[in-house]
Image 1 (cartoon, rainbow, N blue to C red):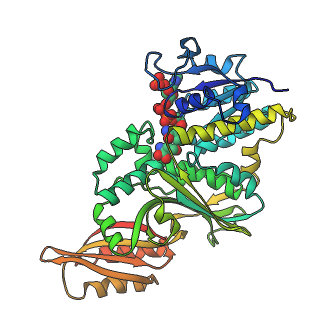
Image 2: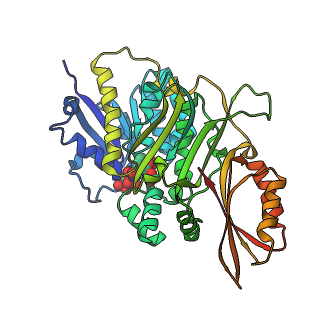
Image 3: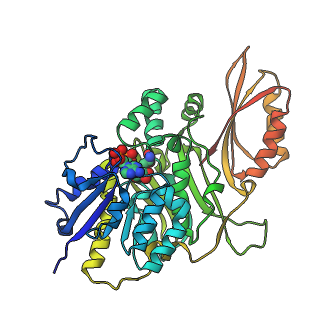
Length: 438
Ligand code: NAP
Ligand code: HSE
């Protein structure tokens, strides 16, 4: 026999309003949704107009009152930010309430603490909406791909930046105008610097890495660069060379010779990256995200769909609520192993030093238009065993030349040494850009 489940919502913004819309229109959806009661909702501004009608008496500016409400059994945290979100999540757990959150910033930094508390309290903390918006990626990594030895997780995991890059490439749209559109559409974080500087993608790859490789990593040590300094010239040159430019997040296990630590060595980074036109990630446009998981024995699996926005993110949030509701309806024993903890703490992992990361590179130099400069640049790369895939001169004139080099896969350490030697050449005026390349 079904029992009604009280939901307390912390936040009624882009995601919260999407969740409330689903909960208040259960017709034609999973029958358990009709058993979910939206009991109380915390907001900052009681007078703000909302896209979904919620009775005024359910609204409060006191989020603790929502968590503490005895009618609330599941707390849904969609307010964002680190605090008070972290404290409210811990308060809900301490009160024996399961939590659903879309808050990757909190989970990337405090996931272990939260998961341990949840396991001790015998409640669930589900985070499907924290990565990939509407794409199911968390539960597949925890469950459906659980038998695999995962070697690599990579992809486009920020909708705002993919939307901006797509519109700049397709329409030549202005960066700031498109960023404003992304904010208006509800894709961007409250502070969009988190999107365009790559920090949101770094939060998400930290979470995916923990699930894929079995242990947390130091979120703040992930090398991160975003798209705010990306120049349209590089996008143009990349296009001429047969590539698109995407903000990629990559986490992969590597062989490391640097120490005898038993911890699994991982190379993790976020950076604008050239993607060959025929690569599956090159066809991911607009707000869509795509995550490639490479495992043994499954091979390569790609998850694709809308990575941000009200409806897609609410879809993932409500799916997590349904999971918890389903467990309760089945009367599963409380105190079962927390799924987040179970998937993310069975092994020690460590980030390798930046110099050990191996990748292909795209670099652009401003140089004098002088005879022999390409040869001297090539020699500097050769001296560090950096193999060049292509070297092209663009825009040679009296004003100078632009030389673009794409390398084969090399260690970042060797690449840095070669770049130091090149920028010391008298004909080389500037290392104008350095991007990754698939
Ligand atoms: P948002 O539109 O800014 O909504 C935040 C909501 O929280 C607002 O309703 C706000 O109230 C309320 N709030 C904030 N601080 C509060 C406080 N101290 N007390 C009471 N209420 C408070 O944010 P969002 O885009 O929905 O994002 C919410 C979370 O989901 C974030 O963690 C974000 O990273 C994550 N997320 C967002 C998306 C997306 O596409 N937007 C996708 C995946 C995950 P007022 O409305 O009164 O201001
Ligand atoms: N700001 C985030 C993005 C929301 O654009 O991807 C989804 O997590």
